Length: 564
Image (cartoon, rainbow, N blue to C red; front, side, top):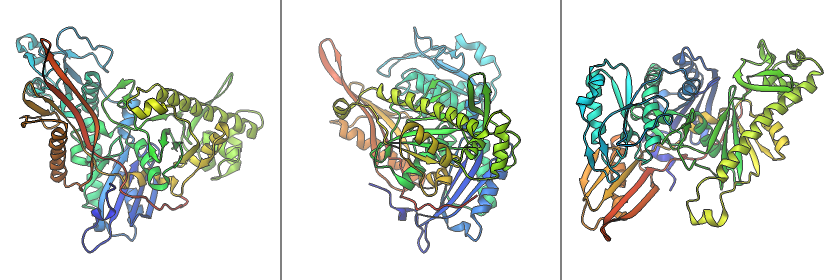
């Protein structure tokens, strides 16, 4: 059931939603009222002063508007993603409790510190941490943030709690626990999630401070949320405890923007073309496809739930390299196109010279492309072919990956998991020219929806709030645990799947009320049930499930076009 727009309406006034997307090249903002865009803005992103570009975007959309009427603010950003991708963040300390016989070196971003102790597969502590073996750790001076992850901690987190206590005594200011960030059983994914959360925390905290300050300066007192990689939102203060969820929010915003502006009715590939990157996603039956495993950061798998997406380093401002065999486009960003005053030719200049895009001074683009030698129009088409070839290759890799995904449902077995695209959808500043050329290359029709220039900000504005949690119960043991809460309680009589869903659903409702989120449906996103056997006899059952407040959009949006 879709959340009604009126759930965000105060008595006596019309709802206004504000969405802001801080991208690598531009910061976009939109103000929505009654599902219509009433104001939109696009300003250059200033990486050295994010506060300044936030204030600039707010000032542009608040002209003749009343800030007090804004009901909710949602922010998406590539700041965290870019910092991780470009490896601009210092490594942090990672402690793991793997139990006997397991070495995870090479599967995590840094060489971990191995703590003693063990939790078995049923959630029993079979060995506690022997701190006499770790005097080197206890005597060292810790700085900044760190992460702790224990194998099977989603079934018993006590060893992680003990390690957190000792590490804080050593001087670490913030300790992220694998069990608190994810209820997923996969130890490697959970460990990497905790590590990246610790690594990005300071950056995300500074970004959050800038957001709060900018909104306060402009008189906006509405609740502030951060978009997640799966298309849901978290209150800003909750997101500070789970900062790894802020990874891939920019690409997620474009997906939601497309869903709000023009949900495709046929199998589609959407491409969000910015100044630096192009984000690719798949659509089936009007909805974006979710990755069947978690997001991957710098080659390391995590438990972060996300869309089936990929970002590649090609955008309108991409640098052009002439090689002995032709052209290479990106992944570096050169700067603004020569057509609008830039110093060197970019992909946008090639699109202008070839007639795919119309802005700036075409003569300047032709002159810039002419520096490569030959007829500039001919060279421009070669450059575009290099760019579309790279994008097409990435799409083909994504199609191959999807076809190899594990089969989970009877419907998958019958129909298979092959995805056959029928159209391309383009959003973002560089979409009209580049996607048209790609459509010709792939022999697919192209749709550029109204409002495509600020689709990310639109998607952020209408994203539904969401929370997720897991529950594990062992009837032999007689207890259940919700790892995200640290709660461990006795099982009620006659415990079964229905009771498990009711208990976990009730906890999610408690969190919804605590964070003043609107009521919405919950969904079961994973479930396992198996019997335990000892000496040829069934001795009990183990239940493991995850539920969440369903992500998506609040409502459709009527976009509009404005020349920025």
